[in-house]
Amino acid sequence: MPHSEYLGWQAYYAMEPRGEVRDDWRAALQSAVLANVHRNPKKQKKAFGPKDFLLSFEKKADVEGEQSPEATRALVEMLAAAYGGRIEIGDAAGDNALLSDED
Image (cartoon, helix red, strand yellow):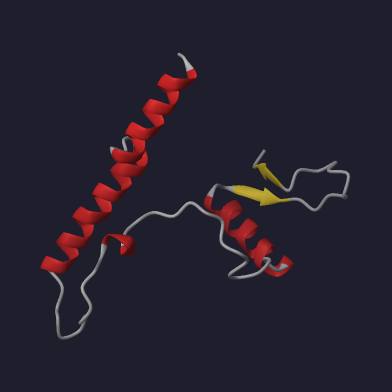
């Protein structure tokens, strides 16, 4: 494809976007319309817009900060209990698995 044709397609896409970004905006618009139809104007005075429902995949700057070791351990214990595993304490070299199946 010649460079001039590529530039032409870029210009066309700028005017008529296609793909997942457009699909996300379409879904967000439909969600906003549906939410506004069922919105109680006494409780929610401001109407919803598409941006209220648009997915964002950008990483946000540490909103909650780093997870504490205690919170990490609680999560691991919960997952071990849910999946029938057990927690083994190993050394830093990883000689023992953190989670393992019951024998």
